[in-house]
Amino acid sequence: MSNVNTSDQWFASWFDTPYYHILYRDRDYTEAGQFMQRLTQRLKLSKDAHIMDLACGRGRHSMYLNKLGYRVTGVDLSDSSIAFAKAELRKTTSTPSINEENTELNPIDASRIEFHVHNMTVPYDQTFDAVFNLFTSFGYFDDAADNLKTIEAIKSNLKPGGYAVIDFMNAHYVVENLVKENSKTEEGITFHNSRRFENGFIYKDIKFTDNDHDYHFTERVSALTLEDFQSYFAAAGVELIDVYGNYQLEDYNQETSDRLIMIFRN
Ligand SMILES: C[S@@+](CC[C@H](N)C(=O)[O-])C[C@H]1O[C@@H](n2cnc3c(N)ncnc32)[C@H](O)[C@@H]1O
Image (cartoon, rainbow, N blue to C red; front, side, top):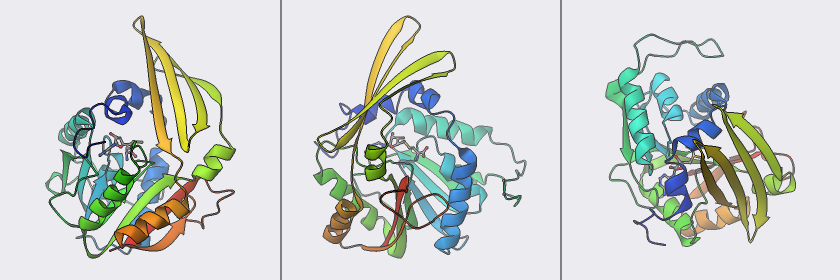
């Protein structure tokens, strides 16, 4: 596939629809916030650090990082998600909020957060103290060469000594524990999901009807293993320094971990 023209790819259409956000609306914001706190503490990022949230979606991690005091740039391929994130920013009040660990978060500092449409296979025109790629925002491409291009782009977006984090699924665990079918109703729409593992990819077919219109989307993510990532890191010339298996940052175990969270540096 081309680096630039992603418009005919499944991820360019599905993530840009409101339905993606409806299906996943119960995602755990508390867990995401705690993960950001642990990660920034683990990386010992100073409060003047500038973090890139690569494939930020509607910016939930970006907003939290900003409230923790960091300067953040969130980028995503989806125009509508970036438009949503910008609109949220304009709506945000200056009331301080309290997180689960009862630490006071800062109000959003709009002068230290921005959102842009950007394709992650291409280097961004700025460098950062840290680049975060979160919540399985990797492995979508037809051509495996684009995975390496993305790691190389991340490397070029890091300041010397900067850290990058890829928060991917533990594909081994997901394949072993594949829920073949389930249904879920959100906002009056019943989503019928079926999953399969085929030719190294995990597929999720999502079918539903809304306003008398039938929809069918397919998510497809490459079942990349730690060894696959290690070969990309070696080819890109970055150093893998830590691997965690969940959002509590406990050790990775191929059989039991649900996540594969890798920290590497320039
Ligand atoms: C599973 S969502 C996660 C979004 C966000 N990180 C979160 O946790 O809410 C994956 C995101 O990757 C984005 N994406 C897919 N391909 C991309 C690309 N080539 N460049 C930038 N973003 C991309 C999608 O638009 C989508 O927002």
